[in-house]
Length: 181
Image (tube, rainbow, N blue to C red; front, top):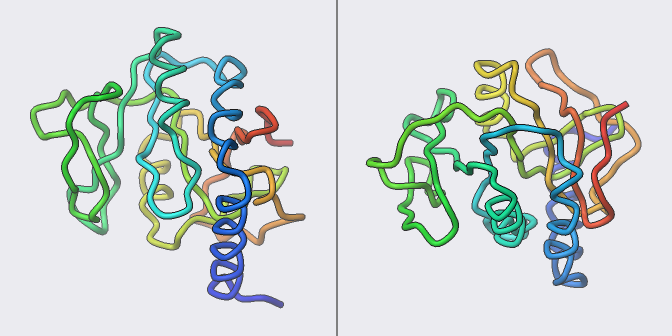
């Protein structure tokens, strides 16, 4: 049985290969923005490394009239907060070193949270980076719809989840939106 550490390493390598061979995946995924569940305020993320880039999706959602926000890590072992943001607005690094809106931006509660991931399954399972930021945040925002944003090739047969792992409601990929079973 593969450990989570080994699975994360394998999936990081796979995601990197997917990013290298399909530079248009994020643009195609943004074309399915209208298929996402409803939600007035949508949390995105700023892609780092080989994560599927959210720039085109941010523009599509913004043009569709949805309010956007980004996560902000204030303290490493707590849930993230979300600050209002629109494409083109300035960002600074948060406590985890991720690009985030400036402190003067309004703090908001998203209805829909798009999350990066390393792997996902059809049942809403999500394998994250291992920092627990999204699981802690999902736990304090249980009513927010949780959607993975990933390459279709990051799908796996079935992930073993732990009690603290929060399931996704669906996943948006370059092949469309798919609700969890």
